[in-house]
Length: 276
Image (tube, rainbow, N blue to C red; front, side):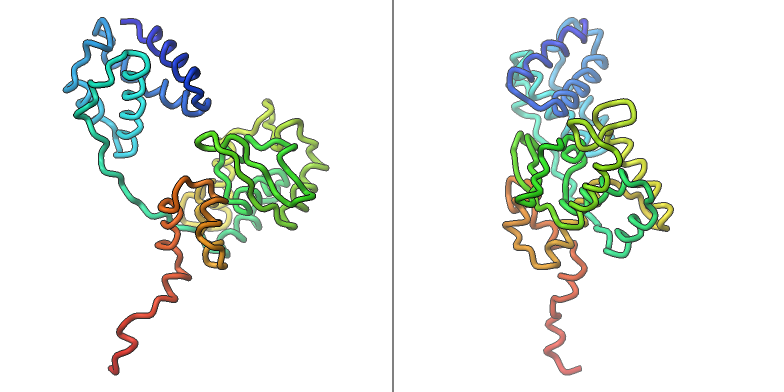
């Protein structure tokens, strides 16, 4: 079996279905690993259900197993034309890990440690708007509407568009950045590319976290979690928060009601009604 022939066909099938580039890359990568594990077979059609299960179980995490299964199900449905092979292979139960947000003093510490204007603008955007890292690097200059004080997030997760609030402090920070760096097309250009990379952002966030004396790994998605938690604590309605985050259902947004220290501390214990 020549794995490259099948992965090329799979990639074409995904493009025909209008999947976004990041999803195509992830799915094709998983299928490529799968096919190389069974390259002695003459066709994916001859890989048995039990062999597929064994390969899935080699994933190091539940989420990793889910990603593998999602990719294979699509591959066998669109390209191999054997969707029924997965009739009795179900998704594993999710690991429901609560995000542990940063507090405001830690956010301030990150800004205090950061002297680079471009980095400050990126951090301000991630925390100020609760953006996913992919949304930040895909932002174009034309997406910033300073008259209406909104930022348009185009073709985000699920190919959905939405708008988020552009605050006065963020607008000033972005204007200072724009005057100095004069970006072209995309709001944040890389050193040798038209777009900044996700890896670079997470690397400098980790560095500033260490400089600020924060004892855990700081990454872009943690800033999004922190923005959502702090917005909820400040009184933003959960239905509005759902739209700003770009969640399909309120169930995803409600996780922040479980992790907010401020909200939890306001809950009165029934013991308070008892005379001790």
